[in-house]
Length: 244
Image (cartoon, rainbow, N blue to C red; front, side, top):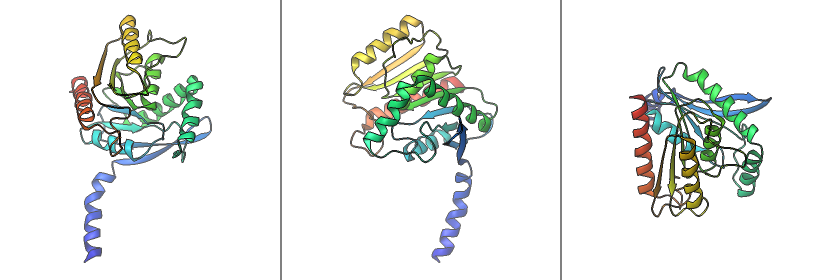
């Protein structure tokens, strides 16, 4: 009986799992492994950039949530296939290397974006979004002048490196930030607002009282349910405004 039930369950799950796959691609001879969750041809494409621990079940969950809403989602890999750090020192090393080599950071994103386009096909538009370290990467791509519709960061790094600005930014910037974040200050938040306004970049920036750094990370001791719910609602409504 158990075998019969398991077989039935497997059959029921096939339609869900067939739309998701890991994708191996190369950048400068090194293998990277992203995750693609499809909603269908002709749907908007979302590029998801992971936190400092690499592409994990968290990003997969967010991709699934968005695919259910009708978006194709490609979660990029900026560390390399099989590189999913668990120790903080390793996470700092990997992210620190990319913070020091911004051109490398941009190249890795652009390669992942090109790979995503192969799978998504024709799309009415693209939005990039990221969490923590991923949010900082998304803003890097906004400053790089990547031609996509929007750049969205959840509790991400907000500081602009010396010598950079938002003069080339093509899409709207959205920032979701916790007022109780002790890693990324409200001064950083305010400075970014001034920079975006000075550059004439359309932007929307929201803070949530009591929300710490990493407030969207489900199941963590920093998770802030209200801030997560409100920021997710605004994010998905923004996507609807763009594409529906």
